[in-house]
Length: 389
Image 1 (spheres, rainbow, N blue to C red):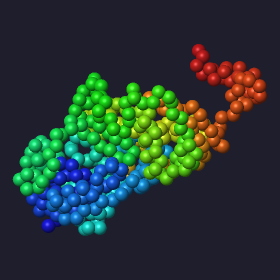
Image 2: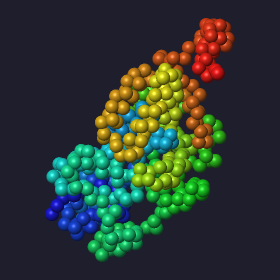
Image 3: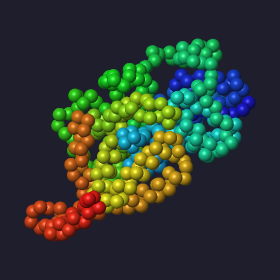
């Protein structure tokens, strides 16, 4: 039998893919990626074996995810269409990378995924896989198979004598990892409908959040968050702590109409407490230590970096070249930012750095002012000269 490595989540689609692939003459090796989704991985592994997987890999990728994917995107200020912190999109090239490495180790003939033909994830998985292994076969059963509904998938498993828990399907499609959560479908498909409160899991209802603001200090070294309230944290623990603090104060909700790569618009609800806090804080620190031209050019490159991630192009050379630029940019982005969190708002109220370009003696209107205002008359005349008729 031919071998295929399946990116396996344990949901209904991927549970069907294993016996379906067997019918097509494939031995299936299931690959479970732990990117902090909080699943019962032992149960998922047993489920894969029960549905016919010959072997199961379960890898904890959380550390690599935060350090090698999330933090570089943070340093780039990458927000897709100036909103989405790309929590779910960032995990796809990482999962695809390890899927290909397992396929190479197992000498598999192909890899497979459970993505639909309408979303972005199919692109992120497949482009990454083919960049790493150009000749690899990729199988996407959900795009082509005969199982058109959830009910048909259940009947298929029943016909194979494969036990599966039948539960009432949520109308929502949900994706989650350590860095954030995405929700779509159901009533959310109407862009006029307000999201029901029960779709949120990481953030409390703003009406139930504390009435008193929470203040939090975030310490950065070269653009990388290192401390909360002066206490050092490892990357995973830092993200978890900020998710907890932000979630309690309802920080990180985003209701967004976005442009998918396949050409359609979709409505997504995102929860990114840690991501929101970190992006707000780092941008504020940048405003303190970067010069004007660097800041403005950085905005252009941030948009490009975000688009590369969203469009599944993480692995291309340009992204690595942009990383080199942002590494250089952040050589002096070291300091502390104080944020005020209150019922969903996240507002910077303080910032300090030994590399600060803010000079009190130039900015003050009080005693100690050294700014020579007499020079301004000539400056203003020269500035306006090209626009006078």
